[in-house]
Length: 420
Image (cartoon, rainbow, N blue to C red; front, side, top):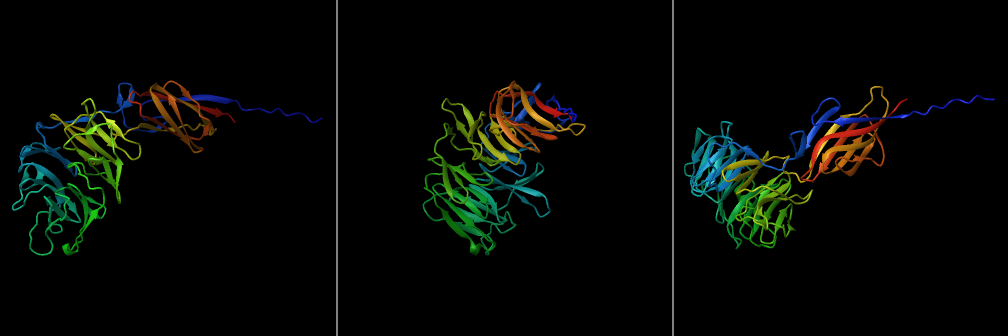
């Protein structure tokens, strides 16, 4: 008789790893996208961050950004953030550009109704002699373009204040047709887009101004709202009587209704692939409408009179307050991402067997290890059981929510460790 061998079946050991709100220990890193800490929990960050300003912004008319600075026009004066103080201007502020000076220091040029100001610092600023005013300005192919009515003036290359009519390097051109005045210009891809009252055209500007080429961009030709044109990175956007249009090679009407009314005159900006404009709800409350071609449109509950964007967020003026919507506060869906070390000390395999979110609200939980990825919806306080276990030594855990009442106090990851 052959003796029977005893077969030992490993017994699974259940473990749990509770994740706090900070990095350290088993938490290799933690990233917040649209969450902020309040007390002992992480909550969606919905509010704009107030910024300190030394001058009153009451009566502010226009706001522009250029290379990390904000220029706010106020009845013939302008304030610069984060620099201190208010400085004399020349009527209404209509545009700001930045340009490197010959000494390698960046200058800012402010376009007014009746002239131009060069600003370098609170100690170095003043009017540009002989420079005429205009309605809008832009930099394209190392030239400065200034529009006044339907006439477009252009500087010599690398000469932001040199608009002499002599020679073939600078000059002016009057746009024909019945499309009306130019009220915005944006350098986009290889062309300068000129937004007119009832039309849109592009200028392809080579080094020799004799080779300038204008082309009409076909669209229905209804009135383009002044102040609505914005560069959103991969596309341009603007508002008309019919709705929201985008330009990404052609002009497309993408929205005909918003559920809110754009504030007139329009205040709009592009940032992080999204298009923002100030709006009013049916009840009269102010808000910001966000066109997001990826996640879908939504509203930000903030009131403002002025809006612009810079490299680090969307800036607002409301009353006398300047504030900023950061990249974390403008997302439709908020997310917390963890990377966890779940490997056993003896090399035994570990399998993720569930997740519990402590707090409140609804979440989509995504789990990913070397073995694969799963994603499921859950509510805080309920243990989520994945349809299959994930084996691995590291775990990526993402919590995503669009619930404005959501809060995360901690996360518990349940796993099984099989003893050899």
